[in-house]
Amino acid sequence: MLVRPFRPVLRLTSLAVLVLVLSGCRIEVPTGTPSAPPNAGTTTAASEPPASPSGSSAAKVELPPLPRAEIVGNDLTFDRGAYVGDASAVGFSDGMSRVPGWTQTKNLVNGESVYTNAVGCTAALRSTQPQDPLVVAGDDRASTEELFRFIDPSILPEYLTVSSWLWGASPDDSKASIEFLSYAQKAAGESPASLVSLRLFHTTRTALAFTVSCPADDALKAAVADVRANTSVIPPR
Image (cartoon, rainbow, N blue to C red; front, side):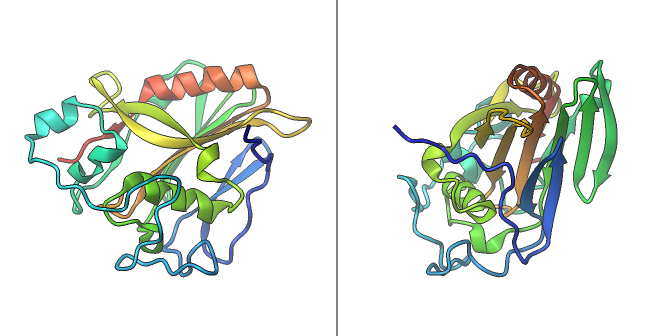
């Protein structure tokens, strides 16, 4: 049985990073383009992708062309990531400001929007700049695993779970879901419960991040449900 390390503070890097302060839990996601790979012995570049971790395949799978209606109307699993074009802008449709009990504290500052609620939870939505050295050609899942490994090498692929978020032009209109990889920690002592959910798109070379932190596990569950019901990832146009 795998035992996940409890790490309330993910490792610092010398690169520019996005610091999400989540009720005392400091979570860092690279915001600029990393200048070095996460492991010293690995050469990672867009033209020389890293070895695929944990059963992910870096081999590019040719997908049959589909009309946009079918791309939007079906779940964007990791193996369908190529349907996001390399020139596509992938972002959030954010309805959290209309959710009772949540207050917006930051609105699209460097690509980040942040919300808090009365029970001490913090939720953030973030988009990153290109992360070329972390991208595994043709593979969103392996690319996302590399992003987690860059944030903290102790977060092994085996500790990550697949999470589904809404996939559509708006939360109300979404009829499908999109897969992300998530890392969750339970509250312990003064450290909050937290969820970090990421997807690095190999086509755009950019990532989206959902992060939620709460003082208690039950509060985290409710907060994640609010975020999941009131935000969506917008399909390419």
